[in-house]
Amino acid sequence: MQCPQKPSAVKIILVVLLVYGISAIIILLFSSMIGFWLNGSEGASFAVGIGVMINLLVFPMVGYVLIARLRSLSETPPPPSENSTEQQEGKETE
Image (cartoon, rainbow, N blue to C red):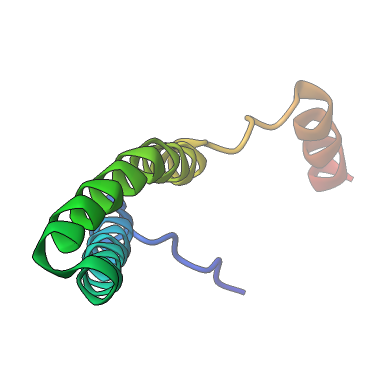
């Protein structure tokens, strides 16, 4: 039975950054549309500033998720203990 292959680190980085980029653009777009609807062009510029602040608050969380996924990729399974190898050798000699 084959082990499932782990995704490459580059693929994970690109997916996380793509999702973050799309969500950042959507936040800025919606905030500017709401600001423009409420108060015209001045409201739109103010709302874009709020959208940028929201994105700056979300960015550390995206970095945390990305680092956690990359660490899980780099974890190697623990080496087999000596007792298990001695037991396997004992079975082969019998």
